[in-house]
Image 1 (cartoon, chains in turn cyan, blue):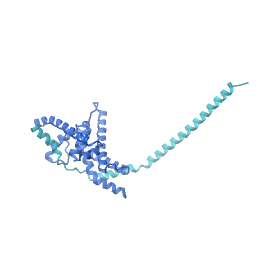
Image 2 (tube, one colour; image 1 turned 45 degrees about the horizontal axis):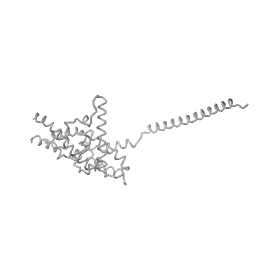
Image 3 (cartoon, rainbow over the protein chains, first blue to last red; image 1 turned 90 degrees about the vertical axis):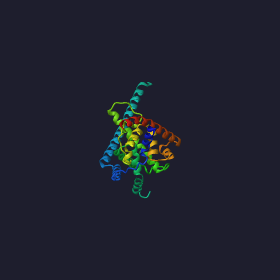
Image 4 (spheres, rainbow over the protein chains, first blue to last red; image 1 turned 90 degrees about the horizontal axis):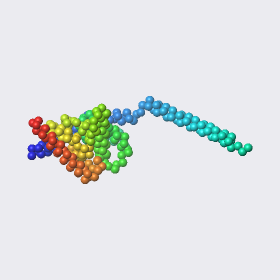
Amino acid sequence: MEKENWIDEVINSTGKIAKAVPDDALFSKIQNRIKKVETVSPEWIWIAAASLLLLASLNVKLVFSKSHKEKSSVERIASYVSTSNQIY
Amino acid sequence: MNNPASNFQNIYNQYYILVYNVALNYLQNIEDAEEITQDVFVQVHHSYYNFNEKSSVKTWIYRITINKCLDLIKHKNSKKRRFVFGKKSQNESEYLNASNFEHPGILLENKEKSAILFDAINQLPENQKTAFILSKIDGLSNPEISEVMQVSVSSVESLIFRSKTNLREKLSQKFEAHRKKK
């Protein structure tokens, strides 16, 4: 009986709980965090732009070198066909 | 939505105590509760326009708060496991061993008992803990809890029943230690 009463008392110990109030400065902290997220520093903008430029130039280079390679391999096959497929 | 800034301030004024208290009940740490309150309102600010209003703002904010609390607990537990080699726990009691936590809103005569209760609550499985806190400490109705937890009302009833049974078991073990102390 004593045990059951004690358990009930423990379970009901949060019954008259008052709401805790956070620090007054919390709203300004939140606003600062929102502003920080919203404003991206110019350094990062330049870094992102430079990365994009680099990526684009690498892509262009890759495309050109690939097409050049393909052309040369076609030429090689053509030259082989022309030598081995002689009628006369 | 005429003025987003004043709207955000209204939402903050309406719900900051709710968010802070849910986080405090869940994490039992004042600094972490403040951190979570900040995280919740930053997310509310960013996703308010995408909020589809299928549920009420209150339910939505509750859900964000609980998810953030669970994320923080998981993050802290995984951080701890990186340094301490040990078995992965089934609940968050690893991080929350705050048996001496004293809730600032609890009456002085109940402080000791509520510390024992919070210690026992931390040993409950995640969903039982959520259901118990929302029902018993935050005073939400079962349909409200079912909306927040996105489960049926009968599941909420079952979770609350099981949480109380588990708590009674854990508290009956603590009773012997309590009696010896006396």
